[in-house]
Every structure is written in C-alpha cells, then in structure tokens.
Image 1 (tube, rainbow, N blue to C red):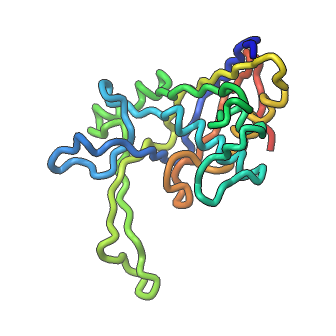
Image 2 (cartoon, rainbow, N blue to C red):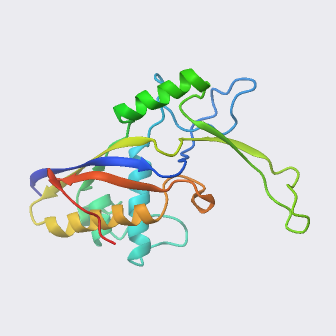
Image 3 (cartoon, rainbow, N blue to C red):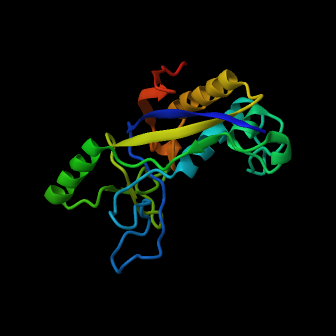
Length: 218
C-alpha cells in the first residue's frame, strides 16, 4: 500500500451553547470543582481532544449507516467506509487509518476574550453551572440531586485541524464526502456531554478541504 498524498481539513469550531468535555479530578483541591473540564496542564486553557472529535464523527456516521453496535463498541468489520476512514482492529483488511484529527485549541480571539473575563470576573476560562432535578409532583427542586460542573461558555471558538491520508486505490472523493457528512451530522447533534440538556451545540466556520472553501450540506 503506497501513500499518495495528505489532504488538510481546517476550520473553526464555534460553541453555540456551553460545551463540556470532562477532565481529570486528580488535582482537585479543598473547595475545588468536582466536575472540571479538560484543560491544558500548563496554560489551564480548555481544548477539545482530537479523540472526542473523531469519536463523535465516527459514531454519528455509524448511526446514519446502520453500523451502530448495541454494546457501544465501534464497528470493527474492517470493510466499510467508516472503518477505512476512521480505523479498524482489522487493519489487514481496511489498511491504515485515513483520518487524523488533532486536538483543537482556542483561537487567538477567544484566548484574549476568556483571559479578559478571567481578569474581570475571576472565571477560570469556564463558566460554573449548577443543576438540580425537579420533583414533577410538587414542582420544586429535589433534594440530593444538586450538581455543579464546568463548561466552556457559548461563543468560544476553537481551531479545527484534521488530515486525510490518501493511499493508492482509495476513493478520495468518497472519503471526503463521508467526512463532510460526519461534520454536518455533528452540527445537528452535540459534542461532549449533556447534549440532551442543551450542552455541546457547535457549528463549523471557514471550513476548507485541501485549501478550498466548502459548505456543509443539510
């Protein structure tokens, strides 16, 4: 199998609602946040792991194409387009993973915006959201269900970057169309956790594939 070329996919992820991708609790201090977001260990800035982006795109394509496994595991047939693009344990059939998705870091304007908010309001690059459950009979807040967690505020922007590896024999246009379909599905669904409660709605802006502007279809 011979590598022909790389195709770069670039754009901006815009958070239309708060985005939550959970981080580690290993370094929680007394009085600290029980449910922190994932952050860069040095700068403390939030980012979106490439694994979260790639995994969500894959799962949505599997749902769309009837490949979703009830046990929650990714398709591993090694023969379908999803396995060829996103990778498979049976790589002797599918070949190497085609799509490489990088971690998405803050755009410069969002970094400045969140730093200003940090200085003015003391927020640590994220909003703190407290939720509770409602007793449907009384209409009052229930007891024992209070939870407080961090999320990246709406309006935050991240840099999206992925690379498609094209090998001899690949249907390049088919793979590009599948990736566009996955990104379009992601805009309709959600990224991260708590999507059914309004979190994680995103959109892509200034998307280019191989340097050419593209629009995501319906």
